[in-house]
Image (cartoon, rainbow, N blue to C red; front, side, top):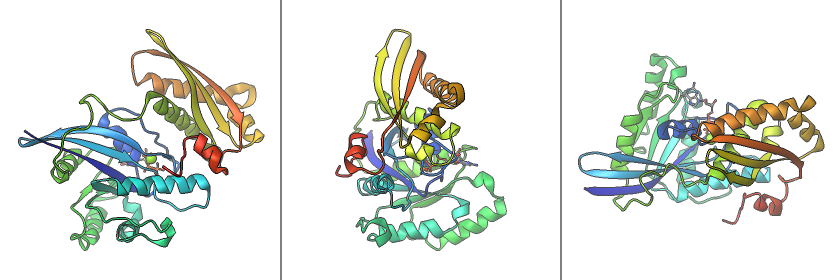
Length: 309
Ligand SMILES: Nc1nc2c(ncn2[C@@H]2O[C@H](COP(=O)(O)OP(=O)(O)OP(=O)(O)O)[C@@H](O)[C@H]2O)c(=O)[nH]1
Ligand SMILES: [Mg+2]
């Protein structure tokens, strides 16, 4: 049997449902999902097998931060992550939603056809792409057909357009089949059991960050970061010691909350999310620190947001 293997960059505007989709197809909540935009900060690989009579594929999906433009250094890093994933991929899965209409797709085509100034003058090689029209549970069948007709004007540009809903799980098999057929031939790069190339520490940090997104509003989720300081693995118990960094003392007070109620809520939620990954019991200790980390390239680098990579 032939083997195929390739990288599929999952690219689109913030909040389109990229990370939720990837969690759904691998069957585990490993990536941070939030109703707030700009949740994903770094690339994350998800590995999925697919097989038909002729070939077996290893599809390596790359989750990326949503395409957006903001002046802050961290946002620039995030944009670069997405553009790098685009460059390094064999195929693009372009995520959009009915609300975006054709706008973000047109912007994506401009971007893929040589780079536009707004995106840091990145020059990108055009790649074959599939459009995934997500969140179709939010529109009527009539409106969906009208929108699909509009996309058809661009049919010479894309391999396929797949209406989809993470909420309803429609369309997964059609999508995987199209990706499988478009992947280059090649040996599988990872073990069959691997779901991701991220370490457990990275996943723990993302799930704690997700709990911060769920429990705090305004700028705090965007100005906080989580580092795993120490993990002690026992037979039935994993002890995780994590640090939450915020920019200001006032934010530290809000993360902790009156009588530590907020930090306890964040901790409980994160512990439950981590617990759901395996059978072991989880002990989670969170400590909050103040450090102005978002505006300094060297500190960002120390925090794992390395612009030079
Ligand atoms: N109704 C509906 N909501 C969805 C669907 N897919 C995702 N969502 C929701 O959309 C929100 C954004 O999902 P994410 O997966 O975090 O979006 P993202 O594209 O990864 O966003 P960034 O990481 O900010 O780029 C979450 O609240 C999801 O639950 C869908 O098919 N239907
Ligand atoms: Mg995301």
